[in-house]
Length: 196
Image (cartoon, rainbow, N blue to C red; front, side, top):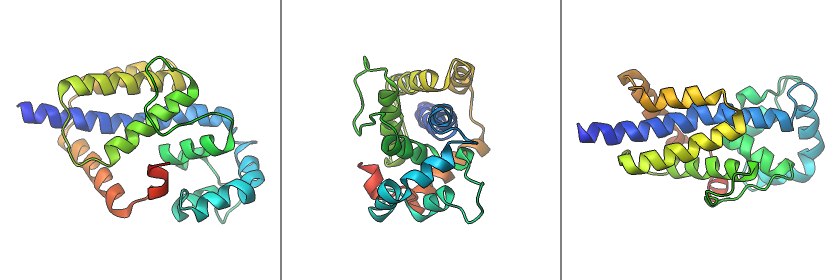
C-alpha cells in the first residue's frame, strides 16, 4: 500500500506538470503573443537574431522549429506548443526574467512562477526515482499549483484540487509513464535547454 502511494504521488506530480501546467502557461503565453495577430509576427521579427541562434545551439530542436515555422502559413498555434517551448519563447522574446534555479517561495512574480514550473518539469523529467514521499508530494504539489493559479487564474483551483484527490486509473498511469519514457528516449528537450 505504501509503495502504491509513493508511486501515485509521483504520477500526480507528472500529471500536474505535463497536463495542467501547460494550460496555465498557455494563458500567460497568449497574453504575451496574441494567437491571431501577435504570435506569427513576433516569430518572424525575431527569427534571425534570436530564434535561429537558439536552434543552432540546440536549445530549440527541429520538431519545435517546425511548429514555429510550419510549411503552411497561418498555422502557428500555441495549442501545439508544450510547456518547454512556451517557456523558452517567453524567456527569449519578452523581458520576463526566467531562471534555472528554484526561486524563493516569497518571489511570486510571473518570471519566478515560470522558472518554478521549468525547474520542477526538468527535475521530474530527469529522475528515475518514480516515487515521492507524502511530505515531498505536499511541498511540490502546493508550490506547483500556486504557480499554476497565479499564471492561469482561479479556474485552475478546481482542476488542481481534483487531481490531488483523484485516483489515477491504470490506463492514465500507463499513459503518464509512457510519456516520460518517450521523452527520455527521444529527448525532445535538447540538453542545452535542460540546463539553460
